[in-house]
Image (cartoon, rainbow, N blue to C red):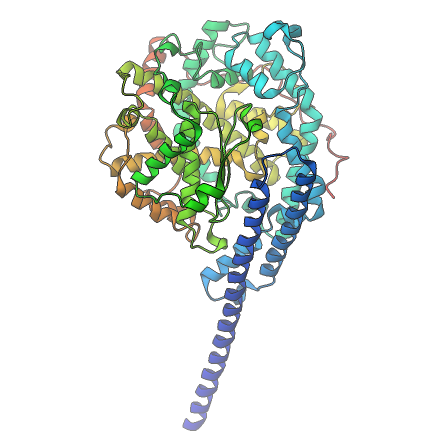
Length: 629
């Protein structure tokens, strides 16, 4: 009996050892695959970057075609990695880190998993949506009466119509451009947008992941939208106070025929307020005149483009970040060509691998100078995680809120004075309030728009709303969260999204902007606390603080090895997550000023329902004949 028991125990031990060995072998096989896949991924994306940044002549068709052919080859290899990762049975993987690596590698194909459909349809659709801003297809208002030399040539949304919104105080002119641009682009935007929505649904099905998990893949969190909803609840009271003040000023300016003093703000005037936040003639000019702002562009008048980059790099070096190496400076950092500087040039950055490429803008003004502080955060973030494998190289887009935090420090009077740019200007309390007021209008008025745009996509993808009801849903959300209505009755066929809704749609840009604004203020407050400036949030400069740099590098070096919440805990250990309290604390002086103003003037806080028709549920979908092959 004793011998039998010993034999049974020995056999059991051998079987356990066999299964453990088998499991270990399977994990080892997965580990070898993941390492090789990471090398392939980096090699492929570095090749894409080299192709993209190799030429300054974007009009060379043959070169563009060659690039597209190369991207197709690379896309096929990325899809192969994705499919090979899917061949592993995750239930057999013992190592949780390796299981997560395989899950990430399954998604590297992104929309490329659609195969030739991606290049024959989706890529064209995305390009078409971007062209909505540059197509000159809108006839000028009243035959060009307000255009230079009464020019009646057709104009584009950007830069022409955008500049009109920045400068015009004629509500009829603004309403005309708001309506006409949407009418001109109705069919084109609707068809292309619908195809892209279907592409995301199909790609998620191929990748065998829930569609919202694929949409919020950057955050690896299919319920990420709930984080955003929480922020909206936190900032809603302050937003309604600012909304009441702005509506009151617009009503004084334009009268009851243009807007209801207790209703939502018409969207063409809402866009005007945002466009004119830093312009003369803004709705706040009565209280904080534009002419009393600091001469910001004058602060950087002696900078050329490269000198501006060098000054920004000095900020990061003061936090303990290394200088750029010669290879980056000589081969991967270059100035945009002339065509990119004809409008509102933005830097182009490739940071999907440790080998970062950047094209910066030739034009230098204060706004560009501040934007460069944000751009270089992406370069340094990539460098800090250069030793990570590709499947944890992404960083939940945290480089953007880091950039926002650096910008908030770099634009303070304290910093501008310390580095000698504002040495001949004296900042007064009135000047500081003027600056803060304009920043607040721009920031707090944009956040609900980013939220609404995100929710539209969220609800379309999860089936809460269908395309034939999306415009009605859009205006419901705009009234509910932003207190905004259409400037006129809208027909059932309308699709009224602004151009920025379509901007970098495939990258979920609207969510990215929401997070970077909110989390940027949270990071900034944490850095101010770290540098002993907790009581001076509006004028806190953490330049030169190595402790701040240490915390930043600790977070950056993680990539996405840990969860989104655990990663930001390196900066926000006490309460990691999205919260609106830091933003509200930053803008508390203007919120308090507005509250007192609203009480004194007995203004209604909130808004009545719109009286405008915002579209009806379609009886027959205008998209029903469109199929995604």
